[in-house]
Image 1 (cartoon, rainbow, N blue to C red):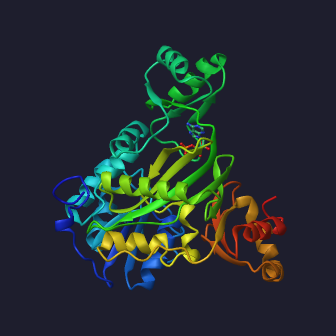
Image 2: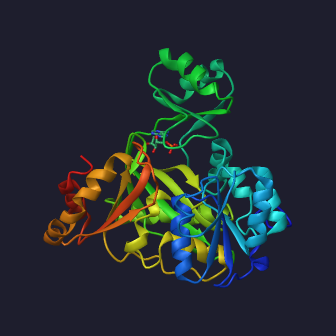
Image 3: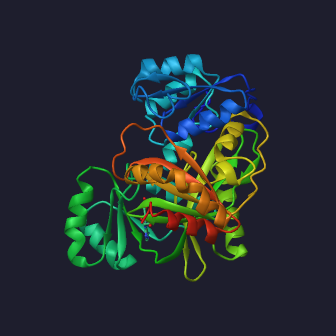
Length: 394
Ligand code: AMP
């Protein structure tokens, strides 16, 4: 998507896009909104393409309301922007190619192509020198049965494309489940992959940034706790030995460099009881598990992303305070908002500073990501105690 190929821009061809320029974002959800808020503070202008008229990003930036596969709208986005980025990975390949021809897309489309498909992604992770859980490509029920024999049960059957937040997955616990798991997941027509079940001690993630000029920095690793496959908490620093964190950050750098990332790459990892790290998946964009950076790091992931794609020097990604990020889902909004007046007293007792972020979504549907709270505190135990004490998430 650089105008002369599908890979990321070569460092010797990277442009500096100075503040005052316009950044076009494909997608207008909360990630685009927070990117626009961070970049606006640095003097950039933003225009987002999204089907929603009044989505999270449209409330804080210019917007074009149209489908992601609308060529005419994409052309308009290209004509109004000096540089184009995206805030979700399922960008239509044809639109991506067209944007690359008509505008400057330093991230390229190759990384999207890789991370849109679990098998391609796993091969790229391995080629970069990081490990993934043993896996096999599944083309039929018979192949699935054999693969279950080789990898052992339980094992996780996943669609290679289109899954998120645990959708498009089936944990096969016994041979009796094989036909139903295959029937259910093959229905979408997507290719399938079977992964060995990792009985992990903890899930971690590291967000790395690589600028169009080739500079790389990582944010501190986050310990992630999910409920029903949806991220609930990110605890930073993660409660593991420093050597594990350093190894996780080293792996993220290797992946950012190996995949020639421009912008951000979120690397999700499993830490096993034996202390091994397996990469679970990648996201080539700002990530929910990096929201803690907004107040807790010297540079937020959103500012870092803008710096990376605009060819500015990357900011210091160091941690300023222990922090716990807790997601605000649809069911949490009402109790949280009615708790607001009581935020301060309890927080003061614990030395905690809860920072509220809401994304401006109109409808608070159950399990919909509506916002998050970053709780800065003297230590993560105090932040977790504040979260528990609110009763909002129990
Ligand atoms: P994913 O969509 O691949 O991020 O998977 C969603 C969640 O399912 C992960 O955060 C894990 O909690 C769980 N999971 C996915 N793959 C595996 C695996 N191979 N072994 C154990 N748990 C897994």
